[in-house]
Amino acid sequence: MTTERADFAILGAGALGSILGAYLARAGYSVVVLARGLRASQIEREGLSIAGLDTFNQRVGVVSDPSRFPGAAVLVLATKTHGSMAALEPLRESPVDVALSVQNGLIKDEQLAAVFGPARVLGALANTSGELLSDGTALFTRNEQLAIGELDGSVSERSQRIARLIDASGIRATAVADIVSLEWSKFVSWAGLMIVSVTTRAATVDFLTDPDSTLVVVRIIRELGRLADACSVPLSDQSTLPVATICAGTEGQGVARLQAFAAEMRLRAPRHRMSSLQDLEAGRPLETDETLGYALERAQAAGVALPLLGSLYPLVRGISRSVATPSGSSR
Image: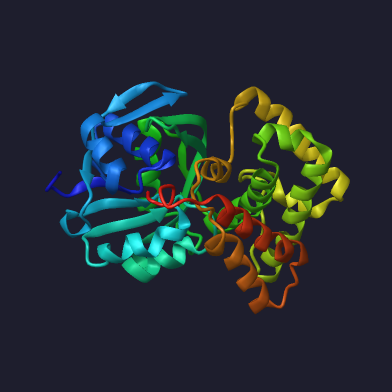
């Protein structure tokens, strides 16, 4: 337990939260991890163990009682989306200078703003992957980019400073001006990959190599591209997948582009599995309502039809209910 205000607080001790916390603490910053239950006890006893792209163990401060959170200069939200507001609400009055979320989906910035106020929120997306193994080790599999930026599209001193600190710790990070576009672009990518991942239960490279499953990913991306267009958000090729190009071309061109991406990924990250597939296999509930469901709500408000997502959303919810277990739902 730490009683001093931290440089960084990581809310959520899954794979990505553990990786961020370990790297930042190893770089010399004061870090507290807000966790609970068995995971909090494990980190207190053993520290954070990292494997994959790097191998080390790092001690960090642990806070399991939110009322004893000492505050932080930067708070990083890294929980699953279905637990966001329950985790954030006890921190409403905490001394936090800046908050950002590395979660999936589009609702995350709104939730942070509801708790800390819009002025203290930065946008962020993690084109970075890991997997929390059964022994608590965080397997670091991809270190591409953690993008951080102001939601109004400006480049600020604080976004540049935070990105520099994270990048210097060993996790590639950069400050960007088009964070909203990148957040949407990642979500469009993630939705297609997530849905096909949990329905095929295949590793990312494997289902992107198959032309039929890749075609479904392309169709989901193109459908969500219409929602982005209706919301006046330009998509970008600079996020997880080249979604702008996929939306602009034909379905066949999109499939070819993703299969070329899979060939490159087989060299860089052959072990990559979507976090949703990891959750499914561990018996944990999937991120559905705050991600896919939220997109359908936005589409209805914008008058945009999303028939494919509208059909696949209840399927994914059903898959989640069929495998979730009481023990798996505790994080």
